[in-house]
Structure formats: C-alpha cells, structure tokens
Image (cartoon, rainbow, N blue to C red; front, side):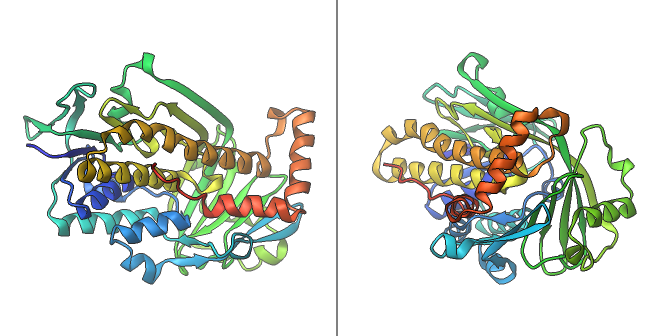
Amino acid sequence: MRTQVAIIGAGPSGLLLGQLLHKAGIDTVIVERQTPEYVLGRIRAGVLEQGTVDLLREAGVSERMDAEGLVHDGVELLVGGKRIRVDLKKLTGGKTVMVYGQTEVTRDLMHARTLSGAPIIYAADNVQPHEMKGEQPYVTYEKDGQTHRIDCDYIAGCDGFHGVARKSIPEAVLTHYERVYPFGWLGLLSDTPPVNHELIYAHHDRGFVLCSQRSLTRSRYYLQVPLTDHVDDWSDERFWNELKARLPEEVGERLVTGPALEKSIAPLRSYVVEPMQYGKLFLVGDAAHIVPPTGAKGLNLAASDVCYLYRILVKVYREGRTDLLDSYSELALRRVWKGERFSWFMTNLLHDFGEHKDAWDQKMQQADREYFFNSHAGLVNIAENYVGLPFEDIE
C-alpha cells in the first residue's frame, strides 16, 4: 500500500489530522491497534478551547458540536468558601470555550472518515514505523496473520503515551521532562443534570473538586484522592457524600445524584519529550506530552500539534516548502510548554499537597491564591490561558 502520510493512532488527534489532510487533497492511511469500540470507550476531557473549536469547523466535523455543544462564557473558582466567577468572554475580548465530550469529537471524526472512504485499519498488531531518517519511510503492521506494509512520505505518531511512535526514536536523541503529582483524580460520570451551569474548580481542605459536564443531562465530577485509593474503595454513595462535603452548602444542596455510568482513578502527571520529530516521523498529542487535567489542556494541545503539522504539510505538498518541516517541533513545543505551565499552575493553585509541600511552598500557594483571585490582571491571566493561547503562524 502507498500513501502520502501514514498516521499511527485513530484517537482524536490522528483522526483530526487525517480529516484535515483529506480535505486538503493529501492522501492518508490511519492504523490503529485497538478496535473502534475500544477507542470510543475512552472517557476523556470535555472542554474545547476556541482554537480547537475553530479547527474542528475547518475540518468540516462541527455540525453536531455546534448543535449540541454548550458554549461557556465563564468558569467558577471556589477557594476558602469564596466563589469567584472568571468571565472568560469579557476578560479575553470575546473568546469562549465549548463543552463537548472528547468521545463525541472522536465519534464525529470517525463518521467523517467513513464518509470520506479514506482507509483506516483497526485492530492492527505490531505496528512499527521504519526508516524515519531515510528517503523512503514506511510502516508495517500485522492483521489476520499477515504482515502488511504502508510506504509513505511522512509518518505521524498519534498513538498516545504508550504507543510505538515515540519508542521508535533512539533514546539518545530524546530528552524527557516529567513531574508526577502525589495524588489522583477519582472521576464519576452520571446521567444527572450538572450542579452548576458553568464548570466549578474548587479547593477544599479535604481536597480538590471539579464539577464538570458533558451535556445538560450528563455530569462529570472529580475528587482529589490519595494514590493509594482504589475505585473499589468508593461506592457511589461514598462519592456523592464526599463531593457534597467539599462544596459550599448553597451548591451542594442543588446536587442531583445518580448511579455511576463510569468511575475511575487517574494519576496526575506532567510530561514532555523533546524533540517532537525525528526525521520524517512527527509526534502528535499524548505521544509527546501529558498534562494534568486541571487546566483542560490535554485534547487542546493535541489539536494545536495537529494544526501546526497540517499547515506545514499543506505547504509541503502545494508549494514544495520542505524547509518548513524542521520547524514543527519548535513551533509545537512553544505552545506545549505554555499549556504545561498553565496546567501545572492550576494544579498547584487548587490542590491540597499536605506533607508534600513544606511551609514555604504552602505560603507561596496561599499568596498565589490571594493575588490571582483578587486581581483583575490575575483573572485575565487565568482567562486567556483557559480559553487557549493563539496559534502561531508557521512562518
């Protein structure tokens, strides 16, 4: 099989890159080691930055998002019993975010891929990129007992943190940066109306809380828990009781409870690998970076990677601008590190670190809260990062 761009991974970043390139007349083949059902079963983020929304519209997959997604003009921060509304639209000159689940984004992109007729191979075993530094890179995979080969011009590694793309790059070439946090998030998804019309990020002495949503009838809640906790330790009743205990009374009394559709504990970490390219292999999304979910940046940083790589490849194929290929990693990483900084900042601002912060760090945490929550400039800083920093021009 021959194509122009081979894409490893059929999560939202791989599918979005494939859709954008297809609309630009650039051939792609997507190879995914999991089944479509498994991919759609991943429960992930639901807050889309303005730039991500615009990119999905450019890709022609925004019809359902625009009809069913919830535009949010603001977000609430609760600290020390005080409620602070961050007016995103006012503080950023009109920018907003869209609440629309990653699962739904993936579903829309899968549907678009099917309609396009462009090839996508699911349940592919032993996927492997080859000759990334050579003139003729290719990807191999196994399916139905046979080994297949995809010859291509470029390879996009969109296969997540545990995928093969990054692991195929010689370790001596890479620099890894990592911060592991001493707690996790216990998440519960339920078919209940959200407790608030906007997201709530709350700091409490018992631990951080996030009240999020997927729709007007589906809610997603998170509790900060120790890394030693297990999902089996948390019955639905215990979760709801603890959530209510961490919310102000006027918020907690509006809480509607119900059976969990899904419950899981996710450890929090920050991770970046540099560079994000090796020859004709380009790392995209979680293959190159992970953020704690506090800043709602995971999917959005993946989308910005897609945006840069897509625009570069269009220039390559339409204008012969192969000189732009070497700029991908630097462009992507500048925005990645800013997203990492904001996620790290929000995580430090709102979580209880207990014995993991000394007296000095605790004082700095308190000073940050007092400044950012009581300063117009501080709220602008939070707002402009939350709605998403602008994409840079590729040249």
